[in-house]
Length: 367
Image 1 (cartoon, one colour):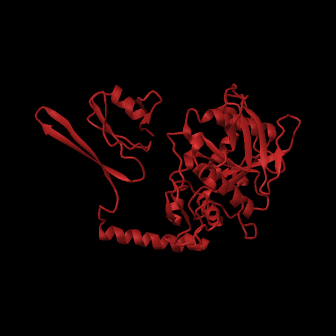
Image 2: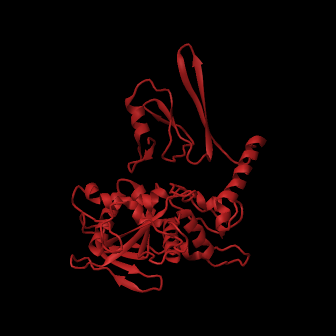
């Protein structure tokens, strides 16, 4: 987990930058992990550092010169991987075979095909991990999709759904989207079935605990943007100028029918509120005491108020009519939600929907 990060002062940081500054004898650092696209090499302490971006969208070409006096860096070129680069027929055949297998083994069970359109948009739906996450329109869309999906498929549903910026891996560009395009947005993890993706879990907390969770998350993302969270089914008012554990002023639970329930933060309020997210993300609730150095203790509970010690018991069954537990996945939730949107062009493909051009914020700053 090395990489490069452009800091607020305009200087480059990250482990690869530190490596170049502190270790002698390095001729080249080929960086990665941070999705940083460099069209020119960074020269740090005389060491060229290069990185091509993310997801194989570019390849890098570096040329060195060798002579009796040693090795000399000559040039670096960033080459986009697009249709100008012709694929080998053998590789194309293997890719097409995998597409067919994906349809047969995974997608057909959900009524989908690899290349069949599921949604279209005429504007960019994006998340900028290095920019202002408050302005993201993709994060709120994903959170809404999770909320919609769980409340549609599970009888107990959830009061609020959440997703962290760190698990959102791609954007929705203008045009027609296929299952493959949507999967790339939420591709991480696996469960106990044969469908890729983290399953959904649900935990219950008191109003006071919910406030404390938000307080911690409001601080955590300052050190790592991956921890920035988007919410659906909830609206919170926060004062960013207040100190630690004093920022959250008000939380409302907003039901699907529009009903608004104000959350009481007092210790006497024992009402439980359900939080849904992918299983990996929701595990953090059980370690908040450790992460907050003992300042906050949140006890993850089930619907009966009993402490959850085994997170597998918190998994959500997305088809209660079938035997066993049927896992839900974030990418499936996103596709199903997008397909529920209005077909604005009346061409048989849902979308575009202007709701997310400027989405409503779940966390609103107040004074």
